[in-house]
Amino acid sequence: MKETVYKKLKEGQNSYTDEGRKDWVLKHPGQVVATVAQIQWCSSTEDAIGEMLENRLALQTWKEKNDKQIEHLTYHVRSNLTDLQRHVIVALITTDVHARDIVDELRAAQVLTTNDFNWQKQLRYYYDAELTQVCRIEQIQARLNYGGEYMGATSRLVITPLTDRCWITITGALHIKLGANPAGPAGTGKTESTKDLAKAIATLCVVFNCSD
Image 1 (tube, rainbow, N blue to C red):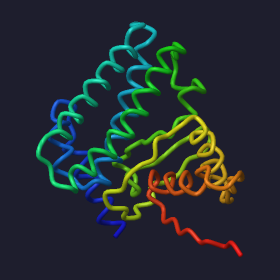
Image 2: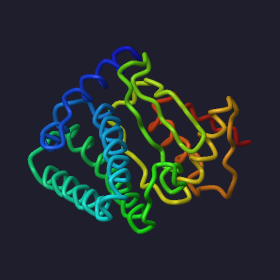
Image 3: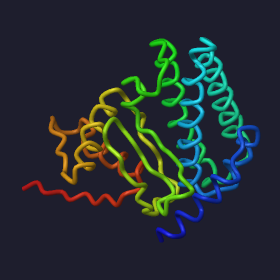
Image 4: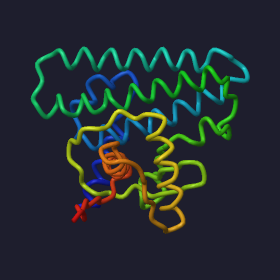
């Protein structure tokens, strides 16, 4: 299973181009589309941050490109798609909107370096063809390998600042081989946030109901 997921991920990564993204999203499995889109977004955002010293409008230009990509996806949603393709694109729009908002935050904060906390706190995806694990995920001090668990075309949660804070705690704990335990009232989304992080890092997540 993991070998197949990594192989498909590699194929998706190698065939990705910014210009052909509109067609690319329909040609690959949902999990590959979701992950490679994150890898490419992360790489392009770091490039834009790197250009900020010479060109103060680099992040603004990149945000406008993000808006264009979301426009292309909404155009797709209105077209004649199969149920599976629609599912993949709706999930991608959810993550793309969050990604666009992050770029806007970075622009507003005038981030000039990738070491800035505003960027470090994000869930970042890096593709490394040299490593056996084709994708690694970083967040602040946490370094995790992409799990390679087959998820299928999953839906994704709308990510809020509280979700981000919850994820920072969990990824930090996983990095030092510990667990994390979100606490709070019933029905506030603790389990769903944890499950969504598991989807993001392709790790098996089993939910037990341990109430009386």
